[in-house]
Image 1 (tube, rainbow over the protein chains, first blue to last red):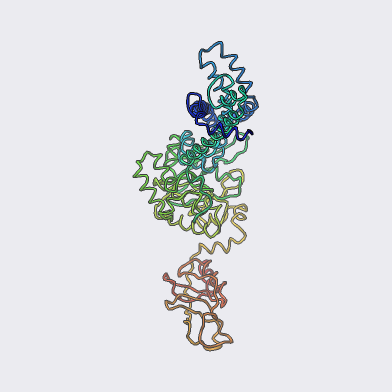
Image 2: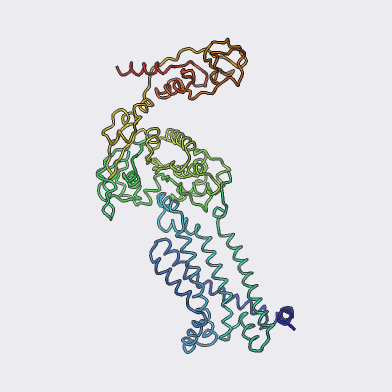
Length: 232
Length: 356
């Protein structure tokens, strides 16, 4: 049987989907890590990005730090984090935390860049008008800069999420659940159908989440920012 | 009244944008700050609402020092219109115009009512109120900018080059409307421009500023044209200031009676230029009947340049005469019906009679 047929067989076998180690259960685990990581990254990167974009301060540091973080290999960070944290933490957490650290590090640069660029790109005339009409600094940020930055903030989050979902497979290396299990276990047992099938499921999951986030984007971004051209 | 009291603004790099400016801007009028770029006109304007803080000196609004009030609070009480309109792209027109009322803490219903009224005053439709700025033309955006500045009913409106970015036809329209709005509301308008024509046509008072932030002259447009304080003002006002001054000169010219002809009426050959009018007596144009005669047809009627209204300035009367193919300028009454014509000489004689 060729690889395609093997993959198809694995994907269409009901047994692959159900049960504790099935595709559905692993997808849920995968999504849990992914959203947790995205949330943590957003909690760090969005406020920093807003601050940098609004004040113009620390731009150099933010750009370079984000670039440096991007260059760090995920697998390396994972092993270092495990080695450092394993003796200090107990149970699942000792493995889960290192995996999350890797994913958060991965997600921070795109979210930071999107947020910062979005705020930075506010029309200077709109900002001047906002101040001139009597908005305080925080009101300018809240009422003008953040709503205007939403398209870029959302693109940052979506780019980050795609990377997280792809990379979250490495959690399986340190024995955690998620769709990475099929890749690691499939390789260990030379079950290539399972390996390739797992990869396909990861890709589909990433696609589905991106479509969901695109829907969210449509809800939170004002139509005024997407309608183009004078429609007199 | 807005009073500048020896106001100086020196930036950190040592450039002096405004130098010892003392000026009394009258309330309920349009005052224009005009000058070449780098003359400190925008800086002066922005010091009124504390967008720029003076290095020394004071600015008083009705006797109160602007620096005594928190900047944000002060700004909410003063309308602010800028060149690129600076609308918030994520908000509808209505929501843009509601900005200041909402900042003042008005409830939604009251803010909405005030914004709706301001939108109407600024010449926009209820349908446009629901649009986003990106769906509007530049001129319409500028109208929204004006509506947004007026929504909370401020006594003072500051305008920084509000019409520089729109085309000349729309600009003239917006300028007329500003005049009308200012008259209706009795507000104090301080407007910055680099365009001397705009300054002379809009301003009740004009402050001409020169490079380095010095006030060169503060006077009415007629005064600026008739008696420029120095060579700088004279050259800034322009070479044709003698002619332009006519725009402020009221002259007593009585129009000469003019025989008018309706379409279809027979015109004897050799009648010279005849003035064609419609049934309401409104001018249609001139027909050349020097070597032609017969019933007047539309194709025989030539358009003509300008028409002066009864009692308008010497400049418009003279222009009507000079732009007419017959050299006779058409004068109409308030309904647009022909009263008669004037010759350029009539206007010049009247001017001579006035100055002697």
